[in-house]
Length: 519
Image 1 (spheres, rainbow, N blue to C red):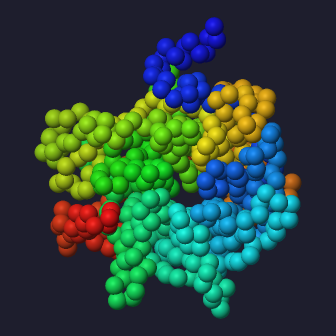
Image 2 (image 1 turned 90 degrees about the vertical axis):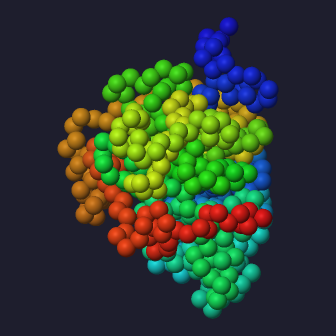
Image 3 (image 1 turned 180 degrees about the horizontal axis):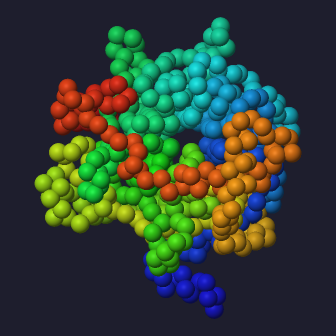
């Protein structure tokens, strides 16, 4: 008998009600490197529907297209050019007519992807949107309207574009929502098409109604209808902090929202409750045993992470995946919402500050508000190896049993529960060893300083130099304590319970109780 199978079955007793569950019980132990990029890969996106195409982009300024209808996927089928700065985000339109790319160069590039399966694909963008004044952090396409997309920028704007609208500037800009902080994430709700969610670098996360945000001028507002609580309290710290949100993601039904938080854990919400229902950590190994003291595990302190829900072959998105600074990708199985709500603990302010409850970290709206301790999912379903540096992105194929990871390295890694699939053959077992960071920091520090001062030569523009530079960053920032930064201070001219001033310039009101947005 396969020892790996028997051990996994014993440690993970599951009712195998779906054939997919049986295939996944050992995790994703096989993988292949997809090699074509020449530098960091920052963005991954599957095409809408069956996910035939994977788009990838990064610091080499190229968008690669990988065709999952190949019998043995090893190389991209085509590539796009145009960006003049690092690519941060990619998004396919609802029916895959367009692919959008954005990043450091402040522009949005729109490519015609209606004929990706043919041999005659133009490499150049068919349109370029030039309205933003800072880096593009996220692009999200409307779930059904092929022509609409929204773009979040570090200039604090969310812009909505309609490809059907002509403009003398070359950008079919249809509406602008101006906030006071750098946008870090934006995404349309997958089912309620008038809703979208935004996040920013001050920890504000808001579900918005585009009918108000981009409606007629007399009726226009920020569109806010639900503000999700990201403020953290720890009794020993005696103050509240609000971490920066690296990225956000809905599950396929739009019932749950996940945030990747800088210097904290991935956090799961329902869209009808401002307080979280779960956090995801790497305190334990997938077999349930504790991570040994001194062993590295999940942390997000250094780079922009992009996490995603997934559940290929399943009735719902039962998993959430995120990259980590310990050179791994992590997958967590997310229990039903009702179960997580039952396990969430609410603590009164009096009990919290009187130390009657021995609980570490809680979410709260303010010092005198109740504290909510969501269920910590401390045992990952799987840890994805094979990388030599930070993993920034984890994304699930929408139908096939594959997970794709990418980050500081130039190679993308395709993970699988089996050595073969409809698009792969003879996958190798993924090495489980993780590279250790050298104790000698002098060379890494020098590489970092040279890059900072622009003294990098062509000979230095290689993967080893990049990895060395991020090793230095990890030494400096890799164990950041959120309670030593991002301190939240309530305004002095308003009560924190009733009319708190948010850092995006808006105020909280009774809009959270407006059930009409879900109609």
